[in-house]
Image 1 (cartoon, rainbow, N blue to C red):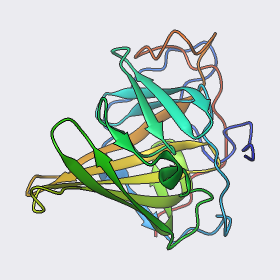
Image 2 (spheres, rainbow, N blue to C red):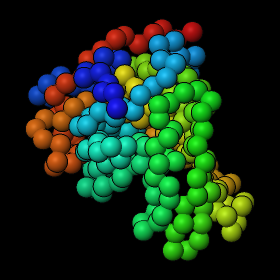
Image 3 (cartoon, rainbow, N blue to C red):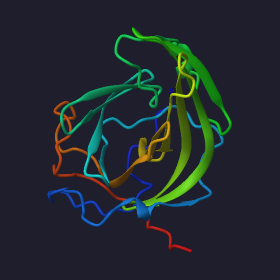
Length: 226
């Protein structure tokens, strides 16, 4: 597995400088989302998530990448809830069984690639499809990001009309998901965007603390809107 860039080179910062308090800035919301074709994405993207990176979201939430083992990415939120994301995107239900190799085969990422697999739970079976839809440059409060847009659809095999679709904007330059959108059948989409990105002060085992100091965040300028 290839390692990614060590720094936060792709983002311009509205995050505080070292030693300042990193609280979520007021007034930032989903309306800042702007999309353009991505111009600096590789044709093939090796697996990379950056341990320790923190994402404070536009809705007031936050998540930190706590660890990366193989293709498993473990995150922790401000309430100290841990979640394991297989291949960085798939969240298995507690006690379920699925083909881990099939999920991992999503990597390396390539536009147009997709994987399909089934998940068996205590209550039934789910059909999953994860697709790499496109490359996209997006503008968010921390700056601009060239992203792979990854769509994961889960369908209840007992009730095919019951489905959940999650869309992720994965920015390889910072090794993190910087935008997500969740849609359930007939429901209004739930959107989260990065409002602040930074690295933790101290170790990453203690988990994310909302309003914690951010020690490092730097990068390029935000392109003008057109």
